[in-house]
Amino acid sequence: MRRRRSARPDAAVAADTVLRLAVLLRAGLAPSRAWIVLDDGGDPVAGRVRAAVTRGEAVSDALAAEGGAWNDVAAAWTVATTVGAPLSESLRDVASALRDGQRTADDIRVALAEPASTARLLGWLPLVAVVLGLALGFDTALVLATTPIGLACLVGGVVLMVIAHRWNAALVRRAAAAPGIPGMAAELTAIALAGGASIDRARGLVRDATGDAAGADVDEVLALSRAAGVPAVELLRSSAWLTRHRARTDGRLRAARLSARLLLPLGVCTLPSFLLLGVAPMMLSILSSGVLTL
Image 1 (tube, one colour):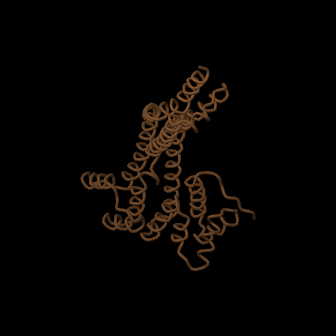
Image 2: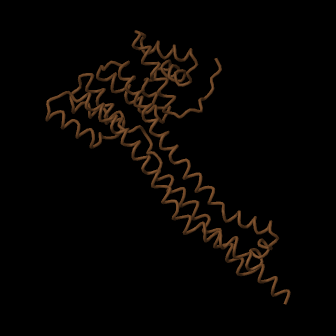
């Protein structure tokens, strides 16, 4: 079967594959057989996992080799198989987390699209001024290239344009969603505890699987669980959902603040560059024409 690489976001593709895998496992298929069924259905990742397992590699290693959101799937697979947690339920929870995390990233990206596009468009305003001056019959290009003042305007305008573009890019990058799925440490800890692991062992497994220690949110939930004497699994899952919800809200707020912050490079760099590359050469052209006439 011919395979085509999906243009959808990595986390969304991973969520679909993981959810189908969870359904097959819940229906009673062994993990190796489930990967074969997915591969026969045309899933490219399943094909690579199947080939890796045939070579004797671990499933978690094959998943981690895919990178991106698959690192979280590999961590969940490792934790669940180590503690003996129900693999189908664990993968279903991970698929839900991936979808929720992707929706969060999509919401933030949509919210950032308008101010980022406006900033990029306004960044080319100085060059539009140059073209406009030429269209009106002014010798702006000649003035910029041949006169000392024109050369100074050209250098200053170009430098300000570059600064504005980099400044805008830095502001947009700072407002974008952080990489990874929010709350995944809590999800993985819940999987480990659901398999019967102690809290200390669960934290160790998550640290070994992800390379990172659990965050302060996980510590807070575990402390609450001990103090209240209630199971921590549902508390951790609720905390993971709340973390993703908070990330979505914070992302929208950053996007709202971005519109105001982008006015800084516009006023400090883009508009002065417009004056240097557009207005000043036209004035110099008019003055030089008047001097020549006299």
